Structure formats: C-alpha cells, structure tokens
Length: 122
Length: 113
Image 1 (cartoon, rainbow over the protein chains, first blue to last red):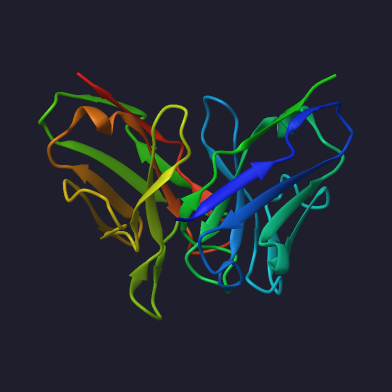
Image 2: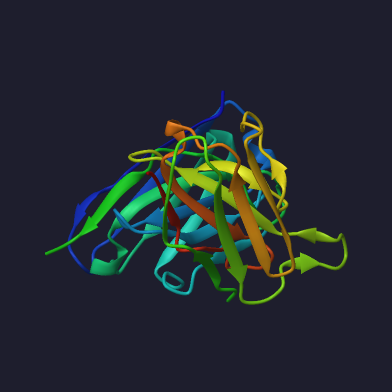
C-alpha cells in the first residue's frame, strides 16, 4: 500500500524558515517524480513544487520561487521542502503527492498524503 | 500559465440523478505529438486529501466506480457522475499537466439536493 506521510508543519513567524518532510513507502520511490501541493483551508489546490526521480528537473510556482527549495533523498525514500522568508500567505495545508511518471515536473498525482499544516503568523 | 476554469462553482443534485461538471482551459491541453489531453480530475471529500479519479481526460483511475466518466478535448472537458450516490458529496477539481506550472480549477462543490 502506498503511503505518504508529511511532517514538519507548525506555527512560524513571518520571515522565518521551516522544513517539511514527506516519507514514502509502498512503491519504488526512486522511479517517480514527486510534488508538493498546498491548500488554504476551505480554498482550492495550488501546486507548489515538483522534483523528478533523480532530481534532474525541479520546478517551482512563481509564488514560492527563490524562497522554497525542494529536494529528495532516494535512499531515505523522502522528499523535503525547505521554506524560507515565510509570508502570511504561505499559510496552508501542504500535501505531498506522488506522480505516475518519473521524468516530468508536470504530471497527474495518483497518491496523496494527509498533509501538514503550516501557519505563518506573528 | 494555463488557467483552468470550472463551472458551476457549486451544484446540487438529487440522489440517483446525473451530475455534470465542466472545466475549460485557457489554451489547448491536447498534445499533438501523442493526441492526448493532459487533464486529470480529482475528488476531495471533507477533511480528506484529493483522490485521483481520471487521467488523460477520460481514463478512470484504479478503483473508481464506473458511474464516473469524463470526456472532452482541446480546451473543454466534462466530468459526469451518472447516478449520484451519497458518498459522492465532495469538491471536484480538474488539473492540467500539459505545462509547468501545473494548474488546478477552482473546484466545484457537489451537494446532495
């Protein structure tokens, strides 16, 4: 069974940093691209960032480029989202999602974690 | 960026009746190289993560009931639930993966009448 478990969320002040993690199991992790997608509670879905199977291609939404960094450790079956210079508008539930292909930063997501909540507030 | 626009924003349908949700992209998401439409549909129930329903615009994901179907090409797409069940209460999103950034529609909230 595919499982994606996010962690690292919490309450943080504007301008500070936070690192999210997503631990994967139940599939051949290093064959697939992975994504971060966020959702303000009660609102829609916003794609944040993607990383291909070998970290060869990485993409970011304009809203986070230059502030967020995605990475993966295939040996640890995990992806990470390093978030810096956080803003109030980054407040959201952050989902980790598995792509169905390995080499594309834009794809459909067949499995999702339950998310980790990031709240940016003073 | 490709803008995805869903209609309606909300929809109330009686149990057993048909529900239809539309999704329009601001530019074509039909790739000429493989004649595939780069569109997915997701279902999100309250307090749950999204669940993949459809990919390549019309292919049901594993385990999705056959009352869910989808169609369309180019810029106009439709998700249809042929006979609404109580468990179909959810918000439905379309997503284009034709280009980066991948973008989602704003969502359509499906309610039971």
